[in-house]
Image (cartoon, rainbow, N blue to C red; front, side, top):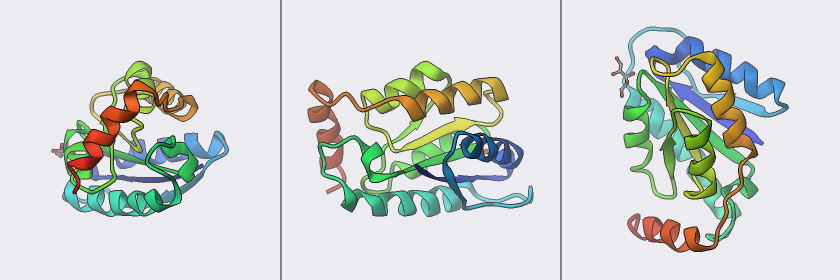
Length: 157
Ligand code: RB5
């Protein structure tokens, strides 16, 4: 997979940690910044990443697991809240704010989420590793969940 990753000033160190983790897992990572801890506004980075990920919606059909597009996004801020609120404004983005392996697995399995958000001030490195691994190995279940995800998509139009 290719993972786009971005943060605000609150998550720069955790972004680097997550990037290394993804690379060790064998993934390609494109880091959209920032690259220092100067204060920035999270909506700028959330929008930038979400627009990159959303471009890949053309590669798959509405019914498919987003995983088939070949890309995911990861957004980090202090709580993950601002990033998830912003990313979800972009059509075709389903950003899930995850706190543990269970929420990460469900975001993929039930919501076909394509952007993972978490809070650098909320979860520690061990939890982040379990979140990322659960997200990465889960698959969208489709079935009864597909109709619900399609209803979310209709709100974009
Ligand atoms: C920055 O202090 C903080 O507000 C931001 O990282 C994030 O938590 C917003 O949702």
